[in-house]
Length: 135
Image 1 (cartoon, rainbow, N blue to C red):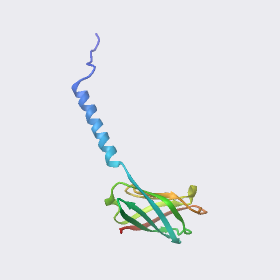
Image 2 (image 1 turned 60 degrees about the vertical axis):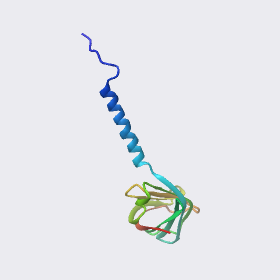
Image 3 (image 1 turned 45 degrees about the vertical axis):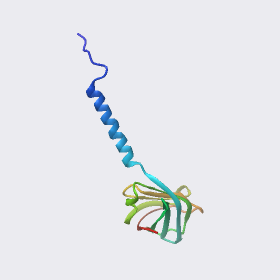
Image 4 (image 1 turned 180 degrees about the vertical axis):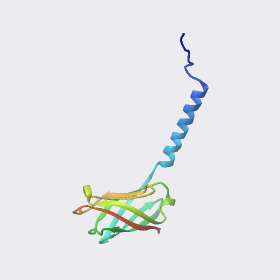
């Protein structure tokens, strides 16, 4: 006796449609936006990253530990989930000098990274705190 299965049932189509909707929602929610500008460190252990988002300048002033030599990236990229995440004080981890770039990652997935204009040697893994401001 052979079992017979319909080639397409209503419940199967609804389940697939539901999964497709959830997947699209997931992609939409977690899609990161990006902005370009610069990261500049004029003194050991401190940096400012500036990005233009919809005509508004957003600045992140950070302190890194251990302090590193000054560095700069004039082609830095900010990846963020929402403009609302670019507020207040935040902690980050990062690396300066590996593959001649600087990279900082925040707990909410926000990231700042860019190629260094002048190499930094040796590379340093860092952590730190900083705050976002606008203007």
